[in-house]
Length: 219
Image (cartoon, rainbow, N blue to C red; front, side):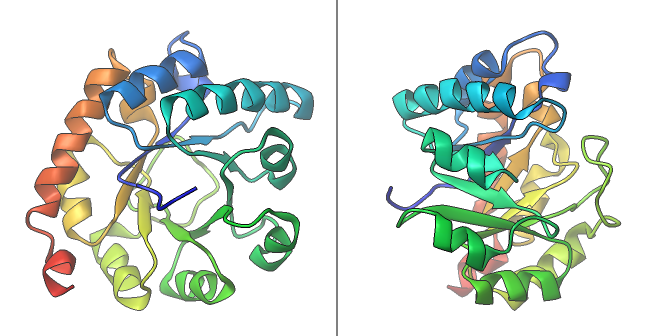
């Protein structure tokens, strides 16, 4: 597919969806302004993950947004997803590239400028800067980078940065101003009373942040 808009990157989490299905949350979030969807499943078996990914692939194709699968290159390939997001302990980018079709998106998590530089040199399409702030949705991450850590990674690489970890309405604008091209959000949308309204409010914060982004002014 063409250029990807990472502005508001929804990461799914069934455990936080308050009884709503992943499909329902995704449909509402995209209606509110989410531009990219990552399917993340940590507690289900391969077949269940595969079936959910297959259904979600149909939905995201209809909605016109890219579907990224977290960690699982095999699941992403099986359902025809648009790409995969890899952690530092997942399959290396070079191996994923050999398996994937042309034009596939590969994102990589980075917890330091060194991680980010290595990801860019290895051919990542974007970097998930993780975690910016402390977050209860992931327990296997490094200490929070903070805005200064995000700025250091922004200065080290040129490819898009998607910030994740503790992103909420109250800090979204400052994260964008610190150099993030997009915000990856879990609970602020998935657990909201209205995922649609939460997504719309976050998009407004993102656009407001871009109005004063030091990195944009340097381009």
